[in-house]
Image (tube, rainbow, N blue to C red; front, side, top):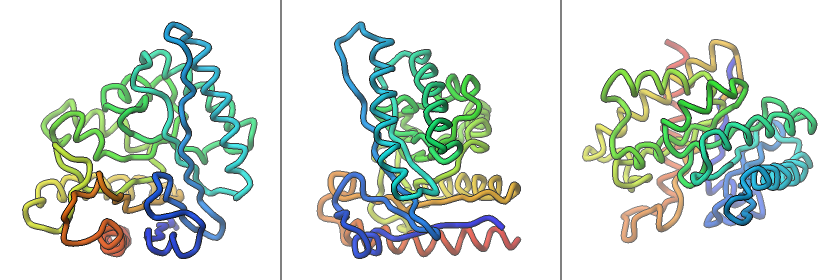
Length: 258
């Protein structure tokens, strides 16, 4: 039976030493801890391309060793760099799989589709994923929607990219964004109906795809503080995250009963 995992931001803040306003806020629980660690980039002088990848790999390994202390079920990585070439990113991800294996973390690390990182566009992912077929992905498609300035449902090209992505997703950052912002302030407001329907269709496809193999799928309603959350919003980002977490938990569970 597939497992859905959710700890709201407010619950996390009460049970851990992490502040809800930190960028690395997300810790989930499923028997043991799922640890989410921001894997930073090591930056060297321009031109030292291979050294840069190796330096980043070493930094990645050091952070993964720290994460192992918590006996993680999942590790989310913001990895690579948008300024790397596609082949540099492929090289880096191939190296990370070796690090995962060496540390006994094979299949536990997923790499996020995040702006500023190697998987910052769907087209980068379309090039990288076939060349690193074992790579696991955290789907935060709100970033892709901003980068492309459209919902990714316009045609065959979008469908092909999402079809390629979905089997590789093991964790979802379930945040509804728009073409101009990675986070909307009120996901259930009718003004965001088109965006909400797009994201929910995608997330349900991911959940159902993972359930076929009885694999663990986790998600978090990743609604962050300002500047992600617009200044002057009626509700705080924590309130939005908590209500969306409860709503989506039910949506996902109900979809598996059909």
